[in-house]
Image (tube, rainbow, N blue to C red; front, side, top):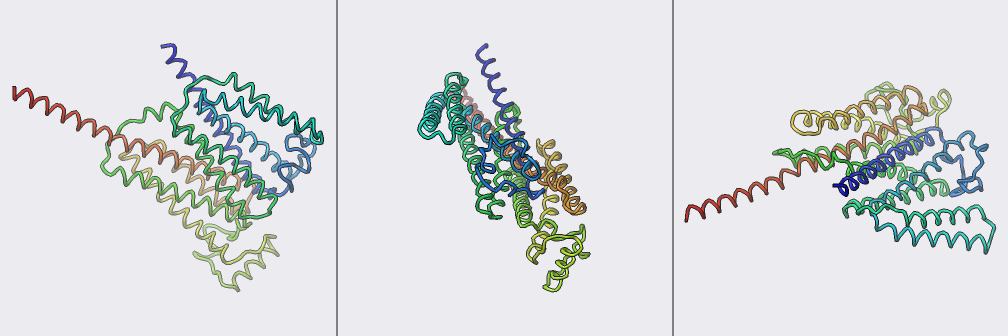
Length: 404
């Protein structure tokens, strides 16, 4: 009984840590939105250093203007990378001890050797040695818990690879000066947040206690939830494209579009829009493709609202996903309002950032709802097979008794 209690306590701590990591990642997404909304993505022109300083030793007195947003974003990103690494190791349980000792020893020896042989970056070398020492010590005191199931360990490794790729993409966005990389960076951030939320969900008792519920058309409705989530992901990609093309206000009014249901995108009309944007509003010039992209964004928003409203209605009537679906619908309504408010306020930085953050919550909630629907509606299949097997066994037994 004591062993069972200790095991459950360790699982609870893993669940809390996974939730905490997901929350810090959400803060990182929010801060990424602040960087973009304030146009501070290139406030720090070098990477991985910050104006020639090691990122962790950059003087606080220099955290001014756009540098504050970009540099703080990098620090929080480093924290998320560390938390994700620990989470991946935790999912491997006691088997992580040997890896920590090995890597810790290598890092510590490398840092010390670089410091002794070269000595031109003492602070960085000592930091590397300190990280190695911490890993080496952790290898001896790492929890002796059982490893998580293999599929969860795979998710942990995937999260680790994703956070490394995300950091590299963010750095390349600065050094290569390519907006396309910013689009990939923003999209991966949303998917990474969803992945961490999923890992946290799998550690909860709720996941283990999901009730069995019969549903005749379960395959169709699981697909419906998944498609609605896919639409949200597509919408977020479109939003990232508009932000990194600096075309978030290609249409400056809402719900109309330049006073019409569908704006004129002829060359004369675009020239007129640009003249007004530059002379009156002080905005960058736009193209017809950017106007059309924003219209697609608006139409897709309406489709998403309709799809999720149907999901909520279906969950309310037939499925055990009522709370998930209602929260999902409320978030989408909030997201639509924030999108409209972004236009009405002339792309206020705080409103635009809230729009980005709420989009991440919409995707995460949709993803988790889809995952729960798959588990909820897949369970009856196994249950039905067990019932059929028991019925056959009973029938054979009764036949045997009758024959006697």
